[in-house]
Image 1: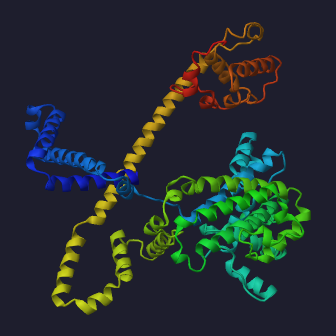
Image 2: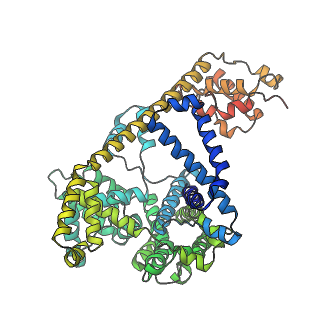
Length: 584
């Protein structure tokens, strides 16, 4: 979109210059054609004359813009290849902090899938109060739903620990108590990473702190419990205590620590370390290739991090000392108690690698950055991280907490006043007349209602978005209702003899309808995405009919469940493309 906008601006500017420099005789045919097209678009001369003056002005401006674009394109085509490249040159690169953050997210997602994929007992579910109540005393359906929507694992445990030991609201949590406890035990206070604000790398840092001081955190939680009159944990304390005794959860915490020590910290040292103010992200393509290559090495040989003699020289991305050696060795000390650490580590690094591949697409071989010259890189300098933008956003959020009614324009004015050194400039150069003029303009600006207009535009955009969503929901509901009606009208096949004797007699659309009808009763039916062809669908239908006839129905499901999966909604591409499928 930015490239398209840049190209359009360039052609318009070139066209405007051409309008000034061209002779009237050479412009006449172009202007005549544009004028004729303008009138034709309005519906003819009579329709044009019937337009209001304001509408004619708008259409004239549009015609002028089209003429400029036409002339600008001609001017551009007359340039040499080198000049065209200079005009069209545009590079972009994503923030390195976001790349690293998303790699952890991708790795964690893959690690969470690992347990179920391998048929292993995964991390304990850390349910909230409502889900815990449903799981312990609700119906079987409520218990299943509570389990499905609840999460567990290292990241969840770190997040809860952050909310307990360093809550973003200083009136909540145990932050003061935990500092005092640690000072009494180890001689100094610790500050738990700020996971409740989802700071960069905070969850990996939290994992490191939890593992380094694991026995002390367990002791602290027991102290908190025992000093209460009730002698019991609250729900969050119970969840954290439970997580710190759960082997799969501890396994995930260890993987987070190892990834941070091997990849995250060494990578961030290079993109945010000393001198990063002069680092150009456009030159960091080799660094990102090195990151991906090192991750592949660890996937192929996890002992780079898990072996008893594992060293930072081969395990860390930059070959330098671990950021937190005590965290690395805390993991080493626990390895004998973690039977699935190797598999979880490989799964995490595979997920992280896939994410790195996706988030470094701008550095691809043959891409714009890779083919640009060093001079072009220098001319398009970009910082490796979004620090300036993120810092400004963070300052704005803090400022609005102090002054919640402050207008955005007022905040921007104050920020520019400080950043641009306006006070010093005004004291040095401005006189009484200047100040009087500025006050007059400020009053005019305040009375213009710009902030109110901005809020109205925001409200209008919100309403339009909501209306679009309502329409989409209504359309989706009507399609579901239509699909359900078709399933309701379906006469189920109860005898498999015809299906076995004449496979060609039933077509794919009918197979899908039959499977959808039976899916309401039998959730053991494979998903259509797993049934790659007609024969697999036919076999699945035969199996479900036989289960149905033998009274082996698995369970009841929602009437609408599986409609999209079965491809029965109107306009569904799978359904339409398969309509004419025959035996061949």
